[in-house]
Image (tube, rainbow, N blue to C red; front, side, top):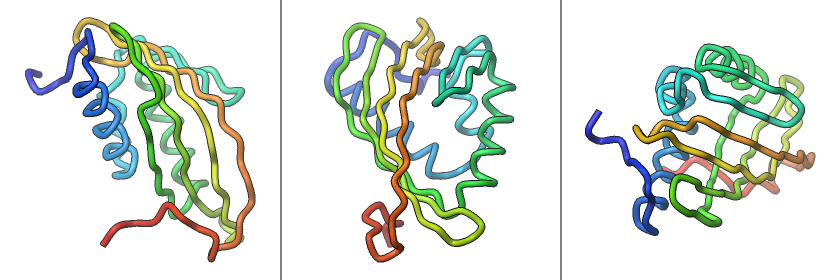
Length: 139
């Protein structure tokens, strides 16, 4: 895949990598998102530990079944060589209609092909009212 952004990253390519990740996650297309990760990727997402692309796919299916109306915004925080750190927030509601804003930080490490081999995410959830939403779909 020649269109994959590979390390070492520059400011421009790190920003592009973050935007591509945001776009993919907002598509809620499990396969599109999973293909950005190496076959042997390692994740920590909250208190859940995942190993391999197939576990990532299963995780994403569960996530988007629970987190209805999911919308994400990522921001580059720092980068160096084959690593990128981002801050993010996303909003979603559960099946009872309660909205949440989830805040967090992610640390990413990429292999030579530009696939993410490690993703460590720390996330906190804040219940909000629907009128407090600020991460909305753009028309």
